[in-house]
Image 1 (cartoon, rainbow, N blue to C red):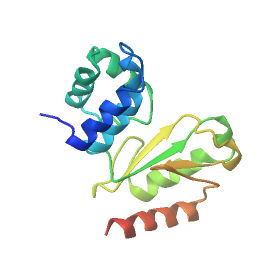
Image 2: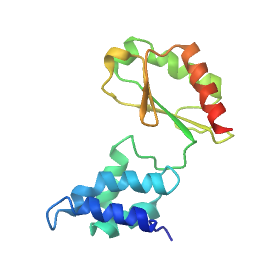
Image 3: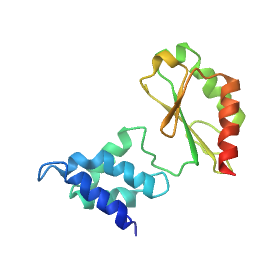
Image 4: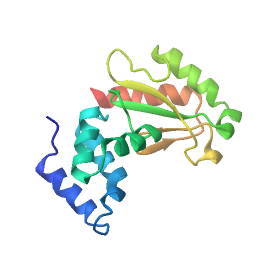
Length: 163
């Protein structure tokens, strides 16, 4: 059974307390972030049901949010998730070429994880950094003005941190 650690459960209670009584659904996104962090980087159905029970809302209300936003992973992902922007401004600056390069370099397709479990490639909608295109999000950080050489350096950086 999925359960938060005592520390995380206290954090959930703190987040819920920010909202008026009866409005605990407002805590959904930050609680989903905590759940994803706590339970292996992705949200299983069991995890989403658990979040629904904590917030006293219907599971479908959690599923609707979790499936809408690309920041939530609905299946296991690698240690490093490359979220490459694929909207117009990034495409005009070559993000489609960067996506193709990453696919070839890591031998995976969009939505897949490398056999060693290190890398997952996702495409996402606008990350709000059009002036730095092409770009991607890696964890909490943006990687900007991507080129094949920069992608190679990022992959090597991640591999060295993983060892």
